Amino acid sequence: MTGLDSWYGYMKSHDLKALWELLHPDAVFESPVVHSPQRGRDITFKYLSSAEKVLGGPGFTYVGEWRSESGAVLEFKNVIDGIEINGVDIISFDPEGRITHFKVMVRPLKAINMLHRLMAEQLAYPTTSTPMPGDHHADL
Image 1: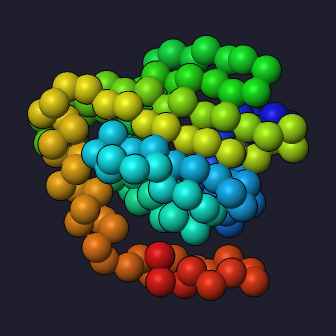
Image 2 (image 1 turned 135 degrees about the vertical axis):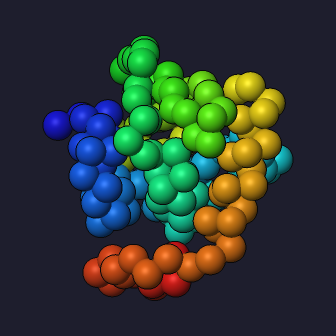
Image 3 (image 1 turned 180 degrees about the horizontal axis):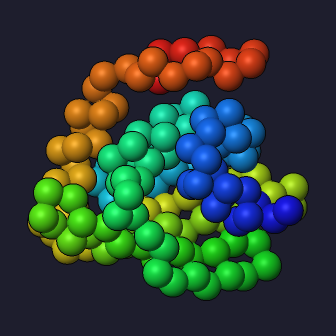
């Protein structure tokens, strides 16, 4: 199973343990609304699990895919509160299939502004997700 297959599996299952295991300990996340890259598994996990809650509803779909030997670009779309969101996930994997870099780009500006608000709300309130075995992020 490739890292990309594992990512698609997570998007179907919403299994937070699977997401945690998919992330490299030094993973980097780049958001369309945060200036600096977010470094480390903990913060990358927090952003990706929150983004999945905000964006990953029933209307979310990947509409394009471009693969390379070590990564992929996945185009997605969704409609939230009547605003059509179009974006890409640019994902890099290590040789073991773990995500090392995840960059999200979104358009149009109206969608970015809405996502900024929704993500800020999601990240401000801890979830009640089950902690991962041996991890210390039960407050995510």
